Length: 174
Image (cartoon, rainbow, N blue to C red):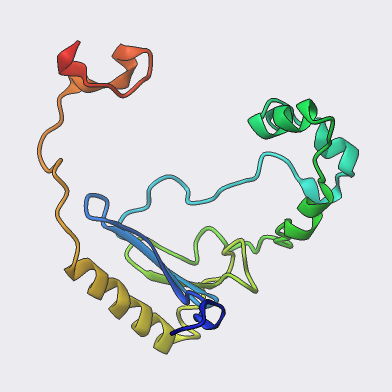
């Protein structure tokens, strides 16, 4: 009988395998490997607000939090959220290097140490080729077990959600 507490923590997480865009990503320990055949967008997420310098009372004022279901339930219980937790979970990226948007080019295998570099500024693929090879082989292994998507073929423009108040629906049934 195994003790549930002694079960090892997950060391690996497959993030994505996209056969259409030829993109994939995997995390192992502190490492994240990304492969993207073509650049889609600018690959850079800019947080809408900088919460690192906000006080707890300022954090309460954000509309999305005030209108959330959780906040509504807490109000009904005459309780307030504890936003001090946010300070512990805030990612601090530091200064963005000038090459942050160019050090991972389409077609490259890009490796990031997400513990030391949570904002994925510095591609470490050149510094850690053994980790790149290991993770690339893991991705190829996962890819061999994938099932082809059923939507391989032309799409019908009539299915576009813009025709249905921006909702995906069974459009041929309507």
